[in-house]
Image (cartoon, rainbow over all chains, first blue to last red; front, side, top):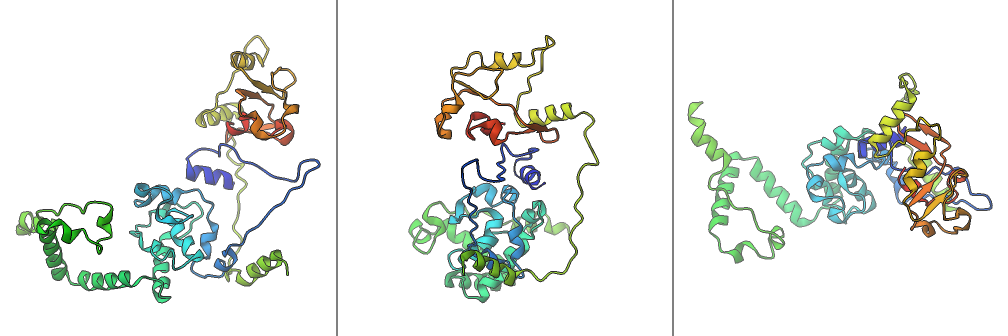
Length: 210
Length: 134
């Protein structure tokens, strides 16, 4: 049953290309089964996260994820990739993978397609709380989150900041924008600033009719 | 204490505290396909397999012989078809990397999935091309 579930959720095929069934050693041989715990039994005791152990590694969450569909399988430097990786990897190393649960829009597509019904996006959200509580989030991220929280709770300030940033991006010389503080700009170009924000366009074109 | 005991003890200590009945698991045998053969053919086709129809002449292995006629190296575990690579002399699976066709007889097939079971006895060496392209 699980082989068919796996294949249907991974490739949409009736069964895997091949599946090996081991029942015992060959005549005259030996068979060894090595079980590796690797923190799994400890994860079993985490109330919020133990259901991630149900994963059958079909990859459906990765194939539907708007982030991983673009970035590919083994991005972000962790062995377990995809949305399920975001909630498994921190159980191996909270500090090393502290950024992963934040790389999600929490749209819940992964949870919708999961054949074993793991609440992936809820666990991603829960991991953010746990990582902040246990002080595993880098200082720069904490400061940025705090600033974003202040800005996003004040629409007028948010719109003013966006307009200021767009104007700044359009006029500042390159060396100001691309420096050590701009991690994004190390390997790629910053997007072109729009001449007008959507809010501004809406206000000018549709706002008067209301 | 062995590592096995360590792991088992840790699992017992960390078992989730959930109180719910075991799920009802259906047997999935209510909705049988009308024709097992056509269900098998359909599923096999979906998975990229090719079904060789037995000819009217009665020699059901004739299409198999025609298929392997042009191949350089054929390894057969089926007595009715002679290959030119003796499986008995193969020590390791990788020695079969140059085989063009392997002819093996499956123990049985599953119609719903278009799959066949190849036991160790059917395969002789688990590395012949069929085990990778069922």
